[in-house]
Image (cartoon, rainbow, N blue to C red):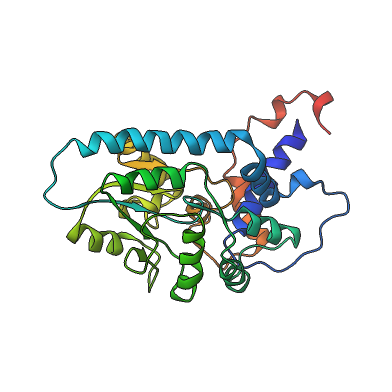
Length: 279
């Protein structure tokens, strides 16, 4: 049983590295593949039927809610606002590559990856957005990719025949990671009837830069919006959830992060574990 605790701790630490610059380290010769959290998460995203089922479930629900929303009158053209990474495009190959070097996200390797326009599509995403377009609903892609990634991002979206894959509907990050200002710009001309994303910040500014406990409390307070106006896709590889655990401090060493994540992990008292199960 104790090995399961260590696996969970290692998983959280490795997922945290996925969006922070980390030095290349040499893995322990005794470490198993399942102890590489980022690789394990990427494997789940690529090979688990459960991941595909969750995506199809999210987009089936989105279609039902879209049909319901279209029954209400609107004084402005309707629109869907969607995130890109892990919402319509699958970047698990990038995470798998980085985890092979026991390294996390870096701007340089990410730019190299996106320049290839080689990301897979998230199951169900294309069919849903094509359906929305067929019903006269515009699609705006609000992403924290940057301007230098514009051409390749459009190529990748077009490769999978995503609708509205053009400069007007692709809204990149300019200065801040919060997407609220960009959502408000879309809302000036369109009635945003649905938001899609894998990260809580894709839905509302109230989640930006909040503590882990606050994020959970806010989710509870807005629970009625999830599955209706907010549609969440699964992502076990990275996200603001881990940034919140370390109070958005990007200067922590890996050892410090490990300590923070370990402290945040809930298990049952070790003194209650039968001695014969302790390894």
